[in-house]
Image 1: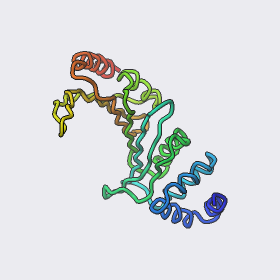
Image 2: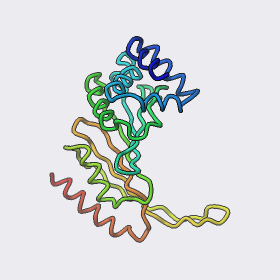
Image 3: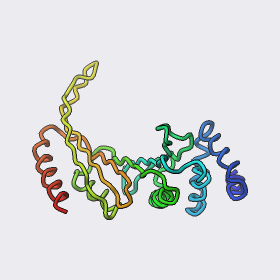
Image 4: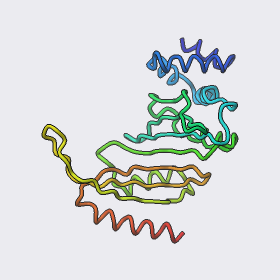
Length: 213
């Protein structure tokens, strides 16, 4: 079946896109197998077919989510239109497949089509990496990016019925602006309440360095 998909991709991108959308609703396992079988060049061609230039432009934006469970981030990708609604086509269930090539394609395509700045949410599953370490890793992905905010949000403890106790905690989130204007939101983890003072000192020091640049 994969050969049929690739032939359609090369000869009739619109029919190929229709097939991708159909399988995304009816058999995402088969769609995932097809995507994983593509070379990087074919995969970028797949993105061009899935997100055609005549359906995105000023007012539209790409949105990515990176979920960093290990050495390489897994991701999803979709387009949000001028009306604030997501377009029906999306990329998901592909793990870390060509993740940095996809990000590069999003950035160049955004500029080429004069779309609104792309956006990204980055997170990782517990056990969380130390906030400074994870933030440094994220900044390394975007040379020239600026740290625009670093927020600590205190969460009250509560009892989750029937008898689970959720302890008070601190949510840590950062915002970056990439060199091309892309907006990157980073969740740096949820930490015990007794870490609040230490995290606060780190936050103040980091923001003072960022404002001095």
